[in-house]
Image 1: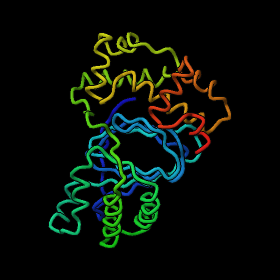
Image 2 (image 1 turned 90 degrees about the horizontal axis):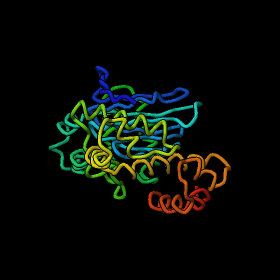
Image 3 (image 1 turned 120 degrees about the vertical axis):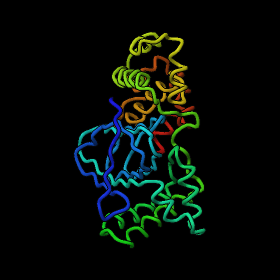
Amino acid sequence: MKLTRENIVTPEKDSFRCLSIDQPEFDNHYHYHPEFEITWIVESSGQRIIGDDISQFTKDDLVMIGPHTPHQYKNWEIGKSQARVIQFDRDTVLDAIINFKEFSAIVKLLNEGGRGYFFSAKTIKHCRKKIEEIFAMEAGPFKVLRFLELLTIISEDDTKSPIVSFGYQRPQNHEKLASLKRILDYLDEHWDKNVTSPAVAAVANMHPQSLSRFFKQHLGISFQDYLINLRIVKSVHLLLNTERTITDIAFSCGFNNLSNYYRQFKRFKNSSPGDYRRAT
């Protein structure tokens, strides 16, 4: 999982980029860019990584990703993957609206939204129509007005919540970044096995006692919590897409104790696995 910088090229006649994705699977590209990004999943499901957050995504998932935040979308299955992505430069928008008091909510959103946001179901429902309208329009002032309407809707969502943790910092040191990539690659391949701190530390050529501190410093989460969350996300996919028993799912996802699986699931999902399966 190599982290790369994506060069966003805005069309000559537009002030922001609209990217329509329609393919068998997302490209699994782990990348970042200095622009904000609004991503709406039209059709697909899988796992996404945004900064230090690992979550499941499904149809109608909508997030705003902050500048310079590494992110990746990975499908559970190859089939039909559709998304609408809007990428825009923060300063371009702020320069255009900063003197209009009516846009104060958008100004606040962009000034305080570096950690990105999840949105409520109500907001997502309203945003879908606006995004469809934006993608159907030719470049011009009315397209920009629709875009500002979209930003207004998400800025006024009082229940929106940050995606990335408060303590998250993207590694700036190339050597540390390489170490982080090796660790995440290892966990992505061995999450369902008996993963130990010494084994993971050895991948990055560091002392086991330094591993959790390294995770806290660069991902804002401990090594153990990262691994547990990764396993919980994998188990959610099995809960919702198979008829396998909860016990079978727990053990196949690396939990060697059923009560511990229930406890950790409750901690990360605020629900029991059974209730989560029935509710969803």
